[in-house]
Image 1 (cartoon, rainbow, N blue to C red):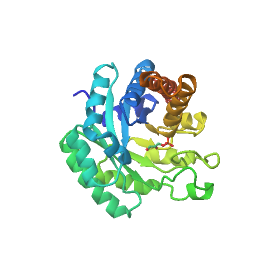
Image 2: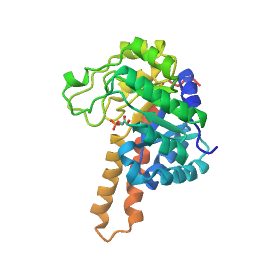
Image 3: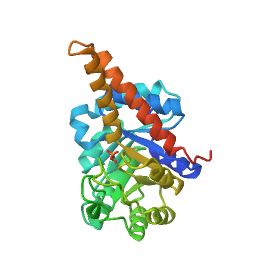
Image 4: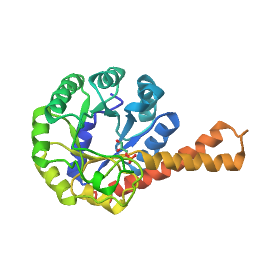
Length: 282
Ligand code: 13P
């Protein structure tokens, strides 16, 4: 299998004191960039597609492109759906050849979240595909600090959720958020540590952009084994593209424009991986 399920990858990371980068991408150039960065840093990788990009990118295109990139890489590569909202989205990705899916019903009540996750786990596991779910509320980073710190994950509930669903990874709310922060994030490290210790599966932190590197490295040291990054990669790509247009104008070759975006994304992804490996033991 060219694309590997992420369950085993994350267990190894938890033992080794590092985190697997889970990078959100949407097209060939961004897939090439993250796979190249992982290759250069000698890190396994999870390539991710956000549910709202499913229609734009096409699940089948994502599988084909990621397979080619993985075949040209010496590191293990997984392809997962990010924040899938229902069984149909997860099924589409599993049937298309993704090696992982996330089902996020964290905004529903606990029992609904458990039941829907169980359904996805049954379908995915039968086909050798890993599953991530979410418990607690991970807000958008432009919300005020007091909103962002509400809805943190309860450690007892996390344990019960994982025992009942048998997910391969659980995303938790401990103070990070998606996007650009309205003020410096305040992370509850003690809560993260308790959840890592009590929960019988690898733990995931979302909102890896714009969060101070030292905070991310500390979360990894405490045992978080997957960090999601989206916004910082998009901004790096955009910076590269903008600089290339400014230099070359509207008649520039597209390869010259997208190459600058890709190169800038590679540098940002490499930096993130170095942070995730800061306390690596093996
Ligand atoms: P950022 O865009 O804040 O990095 O968050 C990405 C993410 O968590 C995707 O699930």
